[in-house]
Image (cartoon, rainbow, N blue to C red; front, top):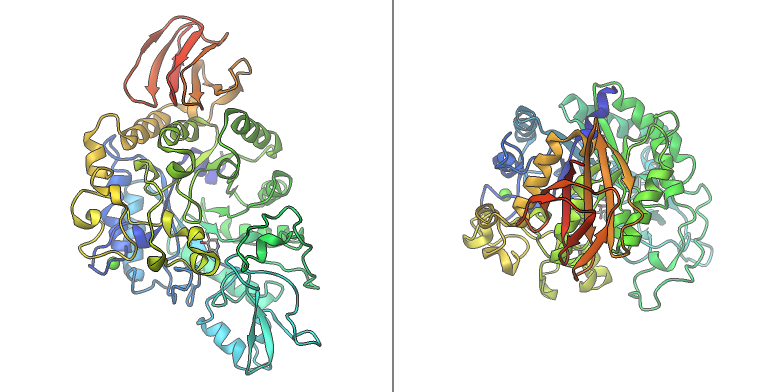
Amino acid sequence: MQANNWLRHSVVYQIYPRSFKDTNGDGVGDLQGIINKLDYLNDGTRNSLGIDAIWISPFYPSPMADFGYDISDYCNVDPLFGDLAAFDRLVAEAHRRGIKVIIDYVPNHTSDQHPWFKESKSSRHNAKRVWYIWRDAKPDGSLPNNWGSVLGGPAWTWDERTGQYYLHQFLEGQPELNWRNPEVRKALLDVLHFWLKRGVDGFRMDVIAFLLKDPDLRDNPPNLAADPNLHPNDIYYRQLHRYEDLDEMSEVIREIRHVLDQYEARIGIGEVWYELDRWVRYFGVNNDGLHMPFNFKLMQRPWSASSIRETVESLEEALPQFGWPNYVLGNHDYARLASRIGPAQARLAAMLLLTLRGTPTLYYGDELGMENGNIPADKVQDPQGILLGAERTRDVARTPMQWDASPHAGFSDVEPWLPISADYQIRNVVEQSNDPTSTLNLYRKLLWFRRQTPALHIGSTRWLLESNEDCFCYIRSHARKEFLVALNLSDIAQRIVLDSLKRGNIVISSHLDRDGEIDTPELSLRPNEGLLIELTY
Ligand code: NOJ
Ligand code: CA
């Protein structure tokens, strides 16, 4: 077994550190807050959630123009979140509980306040000028090419003093590094060494496919299928991105992997959004790439039985023989799961995510069924919401974690940086711990059952084609144990006849209100119900 196989048997939990737990009364979550809540995540008992690894979004020194994805020092902790000693304590405390620690790696761009960029900007002749991507204006003074920033506006900003444009496919405050320069590569690989030596177990690599740019920086073609109602600032989604995700990226990924492999059992996860044929390339050939390019397909596609089946089957088919599936249902850039598919289906989604073959990644608060926060236009913080319109703000998925019914939801003693969701008095960890049918208890049950049941993580999968068009059903089996998962994707009751079902016991209903024996090939599923059934024949 490969030493890094732990990721295959793990459930990853994403923490957005600003919003998890504030311990020093400034309204922003911090590293000590994460330490204080590790027992909630996994204290070794079924009273805790039962996850295996945390991925922490950036906590590095930053002007916070993009809330930490604009880094001004890769090898330190922003005082807002704590210090390196707090980080070391966090790693030690997590490891003591058997929790792996994955941190964010943002190699595509720095902050414009990073000393490297300040030097680069200081003069055309500075040695670090070539560390970033500077270009002259076109003869008519216009931008070097037509690229747009993902977060809104053009991808180029003019520097008056040195008379050139610099490239940023995110904010103006996020200038892009030139990964074709060997010194840049070395500096960024050294960042990996720094944190690996501090004991981190892996990295989530931000917009990893962007690192290499088209050498000629050619114009993007228009996207003729783009929604005509896009915000005027939305140049990015009006174009096709033919020059992202270059084939040469595989060489960079190999170099990154080579660094990871110098340490024991460390893993690389990549933020990769492309279609499956391009996405699979990030595993490398002969297992020399990333351990896990994030798979966002279930988030992006319609939530229906046929679409989910197609998504899961096509993923399994596309995987290289050494690859491993994974599924993500939410993150800090996307609307909340419960708001996208509705609270009832969100419970079914938990059962799907935790019974499919593949590594699940959970987003903090989804285990409570947290919904999109209501962020008044004057409270919008996210630059995407400012540049592309309040309805595009990612703040909605970043509201503080709801721990209890006390003022500020037990997140902080003071008014938090983003408003707490209105439902916090009923939707919080304490309330849901006391309610045997809560979403939190559903997650706990599923997580702990999965942990003790090899069929649910390493077992093989058989799709049941006889399932009706509103239901998605499959069997997970391992070592003579078989489990049937039957999911009703509709909000009306369904009856299905499954040849494979003769006798079985309901282990978990997503409603958490029934168990017991089944002895017919016919199954009744209530609206939005999912069943996990141990087959006994
Ligand atoms: C992806 C991150 O998830 C997002 O939050 C950020 O704005 C961009 N990359 C830029 O770093
Ligand atoms: Ca704080």
